[in-house]
Image (tube, rainbow, N blue to C red; front, side):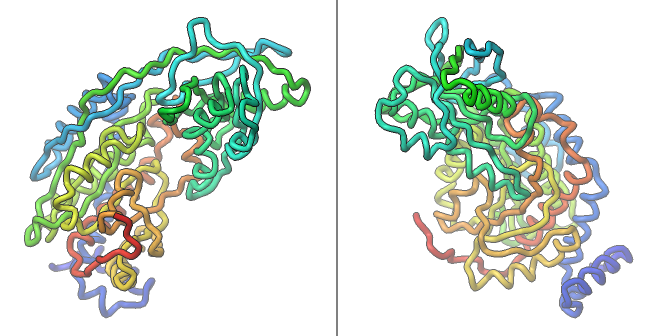
Length: 468
């Protein structure tokens, strides 16, 4: 391949950066990688895709009518973007209807509260629940409460989510959302409310999936906005007997059929080997699903499209997977792993974009330890896009997180999530939160990654410490 002056400048910059000029100036894969980067940065396609999804489809809760509209939208969009193959695979998904959610302090200081039902919650009895609040700083504190100590009470987990660039604060507090209802019910509580799992100070509640246990009474579960959690805490400091009225009309409605939507750029010399880049198509029903995960849909779709337009197809097949029902339990990811188990040994590597649209600053892998240095060297041109070459601690993303247990290598393209949990699972997850330039940088990184992995001659297996 004859490099353009621009690509030669980029290559010289890159080789100076990493000190291996003699290798990179002879490596056509790096030239193509840099070309893909520049094409993505110069393109508005990723933003156009997420705009289309949020405007023409909007909220798309798994199992809802809009979920199937999103599937149709994805099939049509992918079919117009030059992929060699577009198809879908059926997935059975739970159907849950949010209904209305209301709460108010009855005494000692009557005020309304801003709440939302947690995904999967049951409804309150007709007429709602009026009960005193029992506050716990953390899920662990609730778990340590004496048996039957919450009879007739509403448990309240008041755990503040700390802000981190990598979003690790979410892992600190999310257990209260997913496990809180079970633990509260074990202690006799009639309902649970949690401080929203979010880093914002807006009077807006964050939803998200919660879990029940078959042998434990199912109690209603809601999240309140962070300012309202502050309010309840201040009331309890003045009077330990805060009485709250809670009404939820949420309903679980069985199961429905949704789909994983898949598009491929066929490989030229190793078409049966697969580089998977994915995102999830569903969203919660409160916002328009722009950052979670419309951005991811746009990023991986754009990356695949740019690769499809190359003069020469990549060696391996690049497969774009838009997963169903991630929000309600990684349902599409699990279904994909099961449906494709016979070919998982042909999956060269996988990665998912599901952390908004902040710039990618680092890539971590999960590959055979002896392959790490080689695959980092092979990925060196990603540094020209501001992506640091990281370590071997990648997880791949939610819907591909189960693949390493089958021996599939994965990578995590780390995004700046400093403000991600300000908007996550709220009505405020809307298109205006996305910076088009940062989104384009993401698309560039995924295009480089997918192409370089499709061309790699490095054996990334076997993974260490597999747990099949």
